[in-house]
Length: 586
Image (cartoon, rainbow, N blue to C red; front, side, top):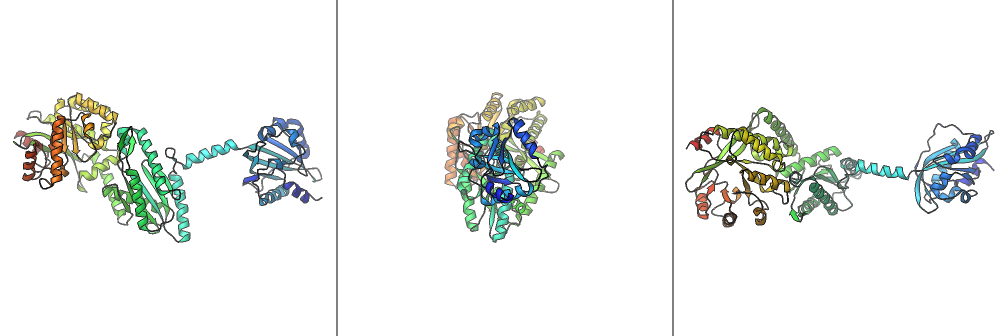
């Protein structure tokens, strides 16, 4: 019988297992002589950490070691005289065997990763090396196989892949895996001459949740959002968390732009459903940007970049919206970048300023206080509205630094006014400041530095700072109140505060938002709302300041309702220091 025929006879049985990864390329190896293998078998075979099988040239097992028994469950008595096919998992193909044996007979060596089945019927992966053993004349005598169980390594590979490609918090694909999938989808769309799309979703004002409720609650919300997004798009589309509070959806085939818009609306609606946090509802919103291949970019990088740009436009339009990318948006993106750079420089160059808007009684016009308002005039950009640079400062993480600067500037000015009639000045504070218990100490140090009584400082906060169950915020507010620092709730009526919630807050003053004053006295609904706020405030023992007062008719109507104090252009615009000083002197 020829060696080739002998090999064909054993090819069906010798270690019949399914290959995961075959390595048929030529390898430099030292041909082991028969005597060396015999020494291995009869000497140290049982000391090996790998399973070892020795067969004759026909593929009949002659001997196995103890590790073989441990890995497969078959004893030496059960194995000797049988063929290695008793380990077959049934996954091997005829093509696999032909390739394996061709390599083994040509090179006397084969190595690869395969699947085997143990005595209990369990399939396991193993790394297998087979050597052909010849005598001095070159005649095939035996085959020697050495194998090791790679289950643990496989498990580690899965874990490593998960670390590399999956987001730990949500279980979604991470940015790296998303970019790979995006490139594959783009290449396929190019080959098939069809559209695909990238949707980028960014949560609106999510940082406030981390700042007020803590990162644990923030992580809980992000995990819930991931589940909602995947449920909305289904298993056909790829959802990823790109980082922070930014998610992305890969739409492999675009039926129409209208269909994309409908999907974007559904995604936003899924986010807007209230979250139950500590038995209290928490509402979020999201902004979405969409780019479509090939209209909005022919590379993966361009598609993702343009979807990001469209997100910023959606946020600038008022949030809770979606936008398709348009070429003009690139110019806007450059403007935002310029604004960011200018704001950072403005802090170092001391370009920010504080102005003071009077608050006065509606009956006598008597000055009862000021609100300190931040202003920025850039040498190149000119006057930059607060609605542009305050959200930008929050995004860049500069709002805390700016808040400390404003507190120091106002205290310094109050010290300069120490010989004039004294009225309190209200300072706007951010959620980030209120979430830090050290903020109370900062306020006390600033008051001490300028020898000011605490009654001269009032702190204004918005309803968005008061997310329910924000224990740290409540503690900070209570400590400020204990130090005789009055707290004002700004923009009241535009948020979600309930009567029961307000009763738990150490608030002294409600400020009615200007949007409810603007159409008075002609707007009946606004009039009823203002009247209700005034009645509620009276019942709770709170003072009220109406913002945005501009006309005599508004002033008369507010007097009729019993509103005592207001601020707005009807009284005076925000004043520079000399003009504010004149008001104090009068």
